[in-house]
Image (tube, rainbow, N blue to C red):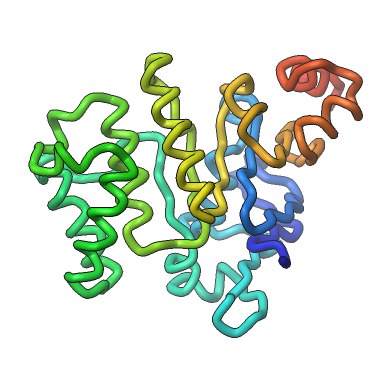
Length: 249
């Protein structure tokens, strides 16, 4: 299968500050693709550029259209792009005064999905997220783990091929983090390509099929966890990351 997402020499700055400096990445269909980097390194900027929230100063992001079997520019085809991807931000991205069920219906309506299809998708996603029994509960009363799962469920209501997650386990206790990863693995098992930005390296290593290391505004390395460990001669992602960060810019 061709890569589902391609970054081609993507550059992004805020004012005079360079955030992304020539990013090149291929994300294959069916992967759990991790992006790691120091806090403030640009992980969230990569994701927000991918979903069209930011426009790069140079380069492009291409996504594979299964409809016509060719690549399209994310910048020039933002409407179709947002049908292809779902995005769950680090902070809650739903409406606290609505119930779980009402949030799902609202986000489905934004994509102009027929009500019956929204109901079917919602039931399936809430069962998968273990939120179905709480569907009448106001979102503002949810625990941190339930908030994360609702954000993911809302981002999947339109059945995107690619799910993009920004720090999905941040601020969660170990039990809730484990529950979130179980949901991510279940979504991957059903065929969803998943892109994750995180600094929890010990969590990414056993789950990701491929990992990109972001350093000094560029991609320092890309590979499977085993390939990266072999290349750097290290026993863990933490050791690899420390080695990369100690290199002079």
